[in-house]
Image 1: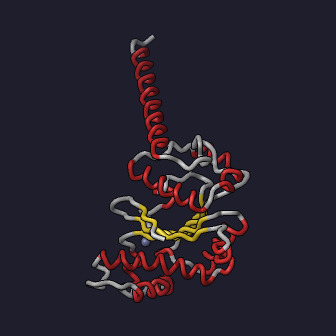
Image 2 (image 1 turned 180 degrees about the horizontal axis):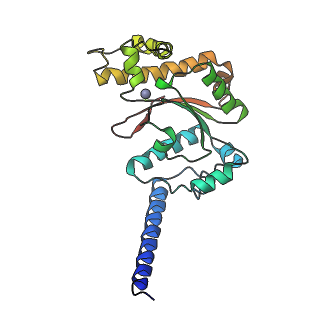
Image 3 (image 1 turned 90 degrees about the vertical axis):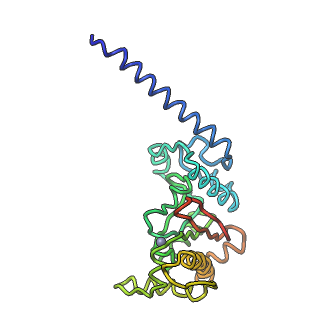
Length: 249
Ligand SMILES: [Zn+2]
């Protein structure tokens, strides 16, 4: 036998132990931060119907906030994606539907430390809701039982800058026109230009607010679910610099 075998074994054991300690540390951190009871107790399985049905819209929003906190601290849950994939293959019971921007730096599930089967996701540049988005949200809530509609904008959004600049390009022109009302409605002392990030982010936030109003106005199905307390329509802004997701409505 080669003389390297024992040291290799030792090395493997060492790796094993380091991996175990790392997982133990993550578990401890997760417990310390607090996780909504009944959601991913072992991070090995997808959300079940019983677990989802027990959660209130506020529980779900609290879980999203905690998930973003773990993400910011670099203490994400030890997701077993293969187990989640297998557990959710026969059925899905997502807790929320998220409308966010296509921006590659703002992936909703990652920045809220969510797993497979947790949320429906709609993405559109500038997180505006068209008729198909509304139809998707109605399916998510009324048919599939999701309890939160989250509109998530983000800082330094290119679509918002494009709307401020009245950019014209193919089909993008029509999309940016949906954001223009937010540009007009934003109260701001200072330079109203796409080069001023303070203004860009103020418009981004106003755009989330107007999108929420738009969803309620154009979807009687969702408005009624919200009035009855079955769902909550919420808004948040994700900060690309800090990784913080701020819920403001
Ligand atoms: Zn964007």
